[in-house]
Length: 89
Image (cartoon, rainbow, N blue to C red; front, side, top):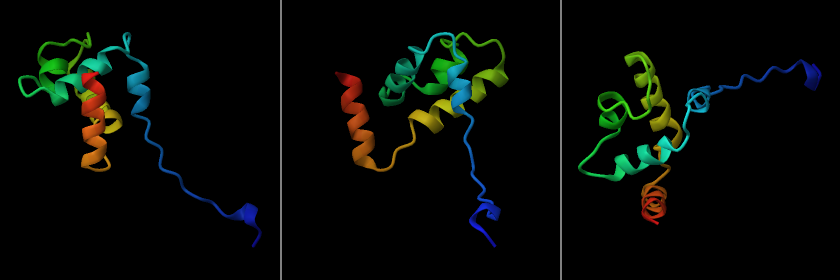
């Protein structure tokens, strides 16, 4: 069997497309800030205050999952600490 006949299945995460559809990408910085702010939460920012200016609850939920999956998933504690430090600068 030649190399050309091998099929490799790739799993693609298309949730970044949700982020790309946001009108204002600067709200991502607010999301990261709220993640590290004990007085705030990502859910408050997106779902309650609707600072992402999304029309439906379904859209808000999708964006919240996409932000968590693409920006707030850390490899280890050092990775999280680095982002926390960068966010404060």
